[in-house]
Image 1: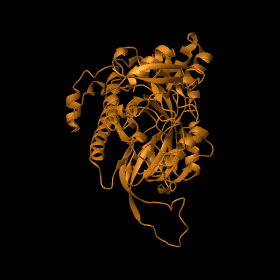
Image 2: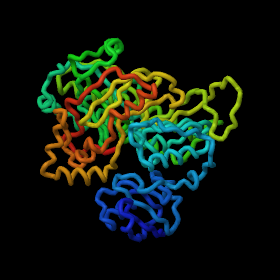
Image 3: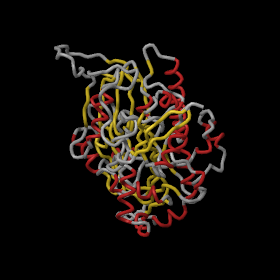
Image 4: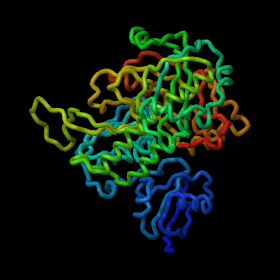
Length: 487
């Protein structure tokens, strides 16, 4: 069997490298296994090419040549800016996209801006907007919206297709004890004990091989949180939604689990032509839309399990995706290279809106959550949303990558003091038996949610309906933990 020679370098510590010989065909699993052994990176989970782009699909590895250098990540984004010398192979350079950043008070890293500018150079890209929660991601920036013509870019959406937020008004009294509520939240881990087949059938969604994960939250920044309304800023809209300050609300943040990642693996192309639509595009959009529907059903089942454990009922107020692509029409701004014109009227054009950690602003109210120890905001999009790709921020956005958060968390709290992280400064309870995740999701790892929302308010993009504080934030319990996915 032929071999290929690779140099594996620790992404977080570039002075640490090793040369390995691996059999062809190369696979992600084989490279990660070698990195864990040779570089002693126990948490190795992602491989970057020298350009800063992640290697996710079999075709990514097939394109590697003998002697290639790969950078191994333990969860942190690519160290340094991704290469801007050229777009990915097969994409022509584009210098006409309009790039903007919707941030003033919120801090935004230069690495995230570099990724934003790199995406703007993809062929067919017309509008690229960074939100106040913009931060570096694996295949591009998170907290951004990308409007294109003629092409769809699956990797910009990533593997958690259909990830989003669902918000409920519950029957639980607002003065309920956080500790007592948290104690009741049992039996939520692992496969749903009821029939996932019936759950999906009722919603006219086709079954998948990932249905054992239906009704589970997942890892990373996903959560389910009971919230108390502490301030009503727009009583009319608040009451019209059926909300009351006397009852707790429930916010569920999760996506399509392993299903979305499987869709991405099945779509090796960097860009998919829409004019005319390629067969690969048609297949991708069909799988993408199915994953979005599955993700919505997943959030509904998470809420159902949550409420069953608490012997409570609820009414759904909203459910929106913030990781997806959709076809629409929009009046596009003049390109960055166009000559000013006296033409008074621009016509709507067909576009593809890619949202990566950006909430849609054309579907009514939505929730912008902070971290597990800060406030969340129920807002109503307002004003001219065309200039921001009909999108607003979806949350606080990370300031520290996961590796840095673990390092700082362990240094600040230590393994012994981690119990302090299970109660927030607001008096809320955190349910999280995964110690690494407990450190990775410390409130300090996120941007200031008040600054993020204030940026949107000052630009006239949202008005605040109500402000909520956490009561119980549920991440994961140790029950059946071995079967829990970490997507």
